[in-house]
Image (tube, rainbow, N blue to C red; front, side):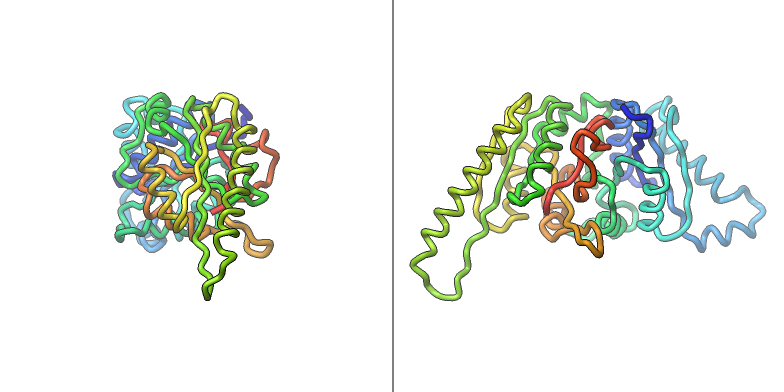
Length: 314
């Protein structure tokens, strides 16, 4: 593994971030990557502490982080972990630290102590996903996390890649294949055909539907042949609203990890697509959100961190 491999795990001392920390530790430990825990303090609290006679807020926060890590990971929980404290807006600081430390993977919970509205994940995680250029593993809020890498493999069980058959698809499948090979779990490709909604009755609609399915089947067959080695790959085509169908497939097929991608723009960079957003809201399982490809597959930074990763379209 490249010595620059680095996993960043932002925490807020909630049970949700405890689960994220266990995933981050299992991944980093498997690949020999560095693991950094990050806490972002409120700048007003930081300013107030500057005038207090008690120990500094940074020192107190580091001690609390060390205690949190020991409670979460066991007596050796602090071994090989860097503790970083920042002050400012949480999402902006997460992105800054990820950039400055050149991390290969961010692991964070879908929500924490800031609250959780039904069907919506935490605002910090959402904002990170809208701007990240780093693959980000989002853990479900009620997921306690694995005790070790073998437990992580059992939690994943099967990897689902929703493919839209765009130019990004081959890269997405290649990275998912690497994850499956690393974890020894099967790969499932799914393509969702959204219903045609003609403004008026057209006799050509059945023909178009047949052609769409034929093309999707042919492309999925080609992708399966490319992904065959060591992944027991399967594919299926479903009809309906993409996010809802992806969540249903994940539930019905015992999927523990959904690999999806982030849209890109020449001006704005990666942005979370509406399908990815809704899958995160609906699926309640691990989601690996991946920015657009910037490196060849064999250089993918998350791959060597233990769970191979990089982009998919959502």
